[in-house]
Length: 83
Image (cartoon, rainbow, N blue to C red; front, side, top):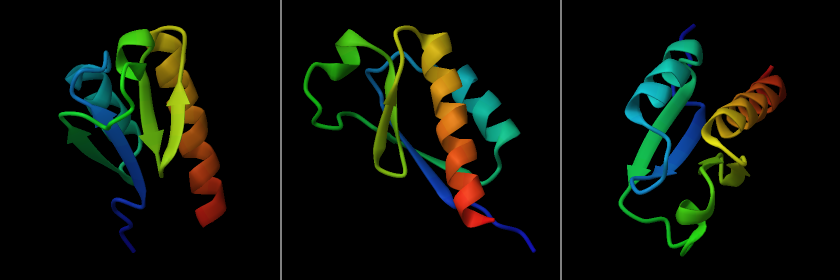
């Protein structure tokens, strides 16, 4: 049974998460669907630190590496709820 797009990762185009990072996440987690928006109406947050929304919950980090790590942790938490 194939499960695709069970977890929604939302990013702002102005954020620091690059396409390469997103491709790596998608390769590691095929259950994730990515939505990219020009703006998420969280004014100024994307300028302060990298962030994303994972199933509607904000995940951020002091830098890109920490943000990606935190996103992976949140994805793993969400996947454990589906098991």
